[in-house]
Image (spheres, rainbow, N blue to C red):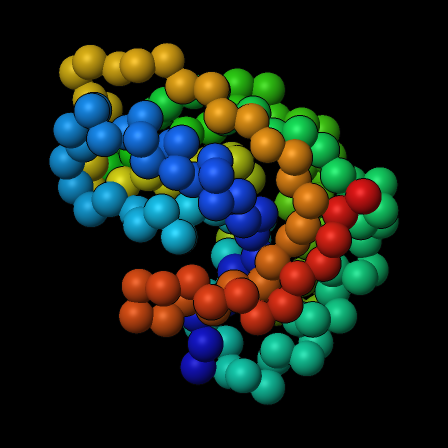
Length: 165
């Protein structure tokens, strides 16, 4: 069984900037390693490796050439349960269309998907809280690819990728 999800990877330079920004915040909880920073599009959970081939076909069914966009994470928030994250105050319509398209394709293929409303975010820490002192956040990058990841022993391994734009 593989633990899988589709996501937008955070570019290495932006991940380093985010890490430098969060260091003085003295965050509690379990920090997400720099190499694992991403914005999830669709979480699939545990699936047998026999599902990889069908999963690799799904993103190609979307108009990916129309879906490159700039993503700006400018809001720090913490959900009930302690998921501290950065989020866009104005999610790009292309991001929402991409996540919705993947959700529809997964459902049509009989694959598991989340029932919750999609709320784009980049997780900074788990089992955490909002820091008492906050520095303004503003991280922007061009989303240029969708990646299918496997989560294995705390590392996120890319299994396939598709360009946007």
